[in-house]
Image (spheres, rainbow, N blue to C red):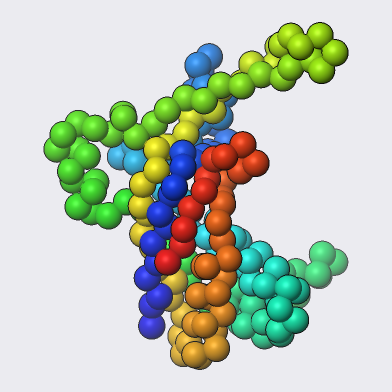
Length: 184
C-alpha cells in the first residue's frame, strides 16, 4: 500500500547537489537529467524519521517500534548489526503535467534564481574579504512522491501523517527564510 504526499514550497528553497556551477554559483541546486528540481527519497526519509523522533520526545509517545520497522535500525558502529526499513521512499518530483507545461513554454530556466550573501564585519560594518557566496534556489512549487510499505498499520499511517504536519522547513538556509513548506 502507498501513501502519496505533496510538498508545497511556500518560499524559495535549496537542496544541494554538492556541486558548484563555475564562478557564478557556489552551491548548485539538485536537478534531474531533464534539469528539473527534485528531492531525493533518502532526504524525505531522513526528514520524516527526524520528525517522528522529535514528535516522540514532545508528545511522550512511543513511536520507536514504527520508526524501526519503517525506517530501519542503524548499525551500532562496531558491527554491521543494523536492519533496513520496510518502507520505500520515492523521489519527490514535479507532476508530469507541470513538467510538460514547463517544457512546452520553455520555462524551465525560470524555475531558478541566484541568491548571494557575504559576511559583514561587526566592528566596521563592511564586507569581509573573500566571503561572497552564491546559492541557486528554486521558486515555490509543488513536488509529489510516495511511500510504500507492506502491511501498514493504522498507527503507522497516523504517525507519518503527524510527521508530515510537523515538517515546516527543509533544505539549507532555513533560518534565512528559505525552504518553508507544507507536507500533505
